[in-house]
Length: 339
Image (cartoon, rainbow, N blue to C red; front, side, top):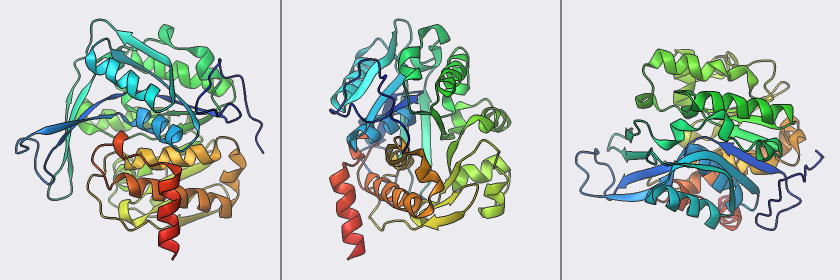
């Protein structure tokens, strides 16, 4: 079993001192979700505010399932920023990596699932506080204490956040963390599709665990095929686990020695926001203290089954963070499905 790093900078989260720390880096924001499903943003009669941002979702997913998590990022020194910091704390996620910007606002995103099943995004960030995080503002002690360091690609779009991202990744790796990457493609935020593809792939060969969706697989490979050959074209020598999520068709997994698939759980989906983050958080929580699970197919399949259940439950409620499940809810779904 992997050795647990207890050098956690005085963290005491969920009474889980013996557990390895998952540090999540990137953006946290407010998602505004229509009060009515299946409409465009313009048609929505009103919106509910739901805390979100993929890396923050992952951190809360880990903590809600009983793990130990911290979030590193920048918020506006405004009502929404203070609200988000409070949500991290309430969910047992360490905010020791948070900084606040006096001049820029916390990012906002309006997101809807249209009747055709496509998600539509509109972002307010010019610039938002998360984009202004500098390398000098990083809590390096916290980052170095991570057993898993998780990140996305939105933090690569502009400086100075890009340099902060690269620095954090480098420090975590030097300290022995497992690097986990979910690009979480949001094309409206990038200057162009070409730039998005290039920047997402610019740090590709550093990550040891990568999770992408079927749509992201097509985007990154510039193909319209989702199969093993297409997925393996993204393989690199540092990679230990490549995951492709397939929505209600479950997920596929690829390692150096084996590959396969794990079925999805059947639920009535209301809002898919945060489902991928829930999946990632669940998996990272399972492997943080024992990276060897990745090389043991039966144990990996069990972990992915648990992660699929987490993702499924998250689609049954609106918003990301409010919908992230507890371990009891996940075990209940798994039990029901096996009956």
